[in-house]
Image (cartoon, rainbow, N blue to C red; front, side):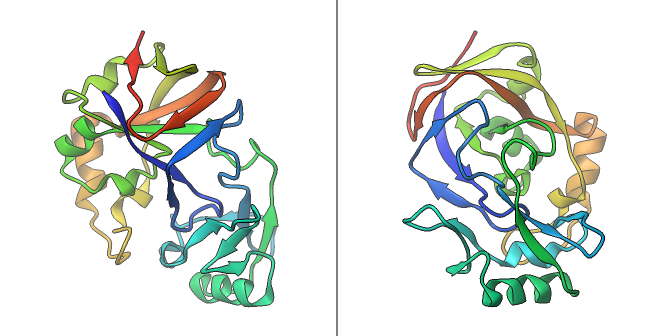
Length: 211
């Protein structure tokens, strides 16, 4: 097995960005999901209910500042793009890791499971995609340790999936059959919520072992 893709999502619920390597800390990938969208009541808004957010690109600029479609995240122009995507006035706020995570700081997906589901793996929004995984082997990993070089990751549990999986990452068209299949065939779970036991650097192509 090896690392096929690495993803960071600087703005929660926007498109992520592929990266070549990451210095993973106890809080996951630095810069991941540090900016969130809040409604007037101060609640986090996601693409579960506002899938048009997936049309916007979240990135980290060369200076480490998050951007939205190339605009600094806290600029008026970026805010207006998000307002239009949500359909109401919202605000963007920086939330220190790990407070912005839904569950744990890393989500690992495998090509075996996505091939079983016959879906685009981006629907699962992983941080790390592993390749050359045999079928549904990931389902045997909770409680085990994933090693990538010096990096040690604890596979804590399978992720319970939600309606976000039904939205095409490019067109935002909804296909409810995706979630139906996950529920019917995989008890509603796929990919792994993980914690970091020992920080380390991970790069594309790195060999992965399960111990």
